[in-house]
Amino acid sequence: MALRIDPYSLRLFVAAAKEGSIARAAAKEHIAASALSRRIADLEYALGAALFMRSPRGIALTEAGQIAFGRGVLIDDDLQTLAREVQAHSGQVCGTLRVFANTSSIVGFLPERLHRICSAYPLVEIALQERMTDEVIRACLDGRADIGVGVARKVPNSVESWHFAADPLMVVLPLGHALAKRRSLRFTEVLAYPLVTAMTGGAVDQLLRERAAAARMQFRTSVAVSSFDASCRMVEAGLGIAVLPNSAASAYAGSRRFLRRALNETWAKHELRLYAAKKVPRPRALAALIAALSG
Image (cartoon, rainbow, N blue to C red; front, side, top):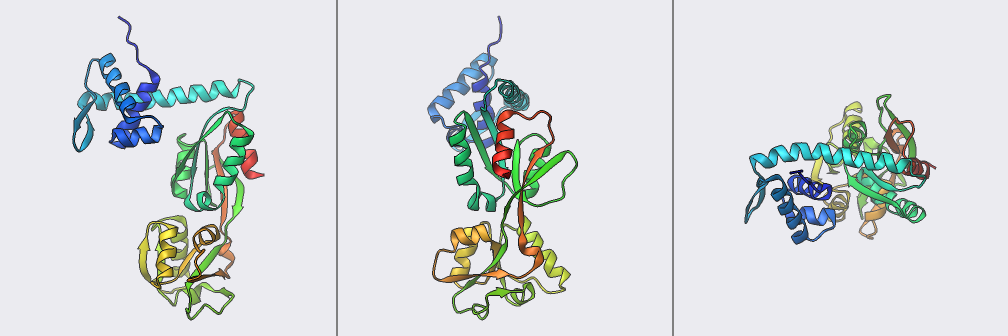
């Protein structure tokens, strides 16, 4: 008897295994949780083995499920690659594009640009994931992302890059701060005060720490948070000052309780770039996306 496995059910199983939750996988894949659960049950029936252990706490892979997950990831990736390659030669700009992007590009630039692209090419689907710049580049290298957006970095010869946007660093200050009357600030002046830092280990955090070390000045942190908007809230509450990309400072600094000032340093220009693995030829949809975002 021939074994019949539905590729979509396999993809949903992989998503559930990655998320560790039927509900989260269903939300990510835009399907009802009950429908996803039925698909997985059908897959288990086809394979003749339980793939998950279910409990009130969630789901966990069985031994058979672990084997199915390892193979399933590879099969699903191969099927997605097959679809993109066929679509690339279909004469139409269509298909799913996997975009990995850092926070500042998502906050400041990508939503409107991606909307214009989707409007121009209605058969193109964008699968966007937020990641730090180093992970963006790694994803382009290992094939998990078709295109990436992140801070300018030196990259291997197997990766191409294009200018995406200028996103200079700004200093965000609470009202009444001693530096508030200045129109622009040097970094040595900023370092005289405790900083609210966002996303420890990220591109901006690494850059600021490196520049503080180069200036032989102490990098003092008052609060460390995981997002730019949380950083702005901490500044607003008077817990310190922050150095953020202009895109983030503009998006979140709408309150009258704090101010933005230019960071007067040559290294504060902070360029964002597009990244993609070198491929010839590129799928039509990917080539269209690169042309639209780098233009």
